[in-house]
Image 1 (cartoon, rainbow, N blue to C red):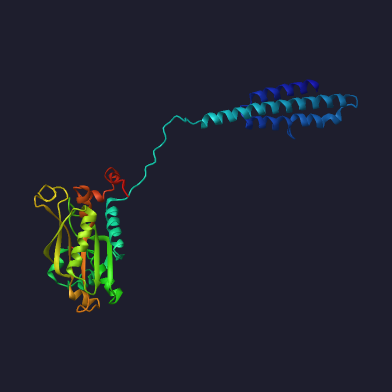
Image 2 (cartoon, rainbow, N blue to C red):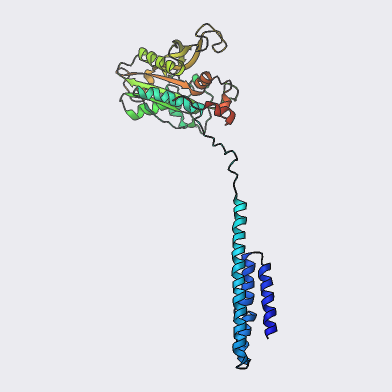
Length: 345
Ligand code: DAH
């Protein structure tokens, strides 16, 4: 029995040393010291021994158990340290590596143009009105003095959804909606938003683009008010030394109607490629609100008058930032968009 015990101890010690990790070590502990292990068995078998042999064997078994336990603990300490070391090596970081650059976003150039124009008009007491992109034929055309069958409807190739609903072709329906809602009250609004036309996309056309509508209605609103307002706009967007020029034009919802040009910001008026050698650049359409439009929205055209204008945001952005293709605004190419990192306020 003593022999057997020594052999067991040897075996256990060898296995303890061979255990490669804490799990294997635990398996060894269970195998030798566990309830069903051989050492427990030996202790259980002591009853069969003679009374003289019993204490001697008892002491021997205990000594073996203590030795194995001590070795297990020692090995466990070594393995734990090893595990920590391995973990540390795995997780080690090279603090000399350059950091990853955090790329910050920036405003889209069209958003910038819209916000600049909003800032100007809000500072002059305007509020910002919103319309809907899916619009009724009534607001997009009829309430703007463009009854069904009016030839001027052809100027705006339209995406119809049904006979009566369409994707708005301009932001002007917000004029009619606002007047209807204000029920005869004075109005001072601008309204930026998306508009849609059934155009083939090319460098200067896009089936979707942005406009900013302006509308002022009240007593004694005159053409000179329109002119002064547009002059402020031109100077804010293209520089204090810009001059404006109004040319007669036609829109069914304004009378008289004008087209506004600014003096060329590149050559100052002497003629260059930006102004096509004319010294002037066409910027927007505007006019005095047509009496029919006022009347349809419930305003008394004998008592109040108004002016309106419509700006193409892409056109402003293209001129301001020298962009030669309208499609750049919509392709989400970061090489293009990242050039508009805002440096000034
Ligand atoms: N809605 C016109 C267009 O899309 C632009 C326009 C012209 C708007 C004159 C106006 C205006 O408010 O008075 O072509």
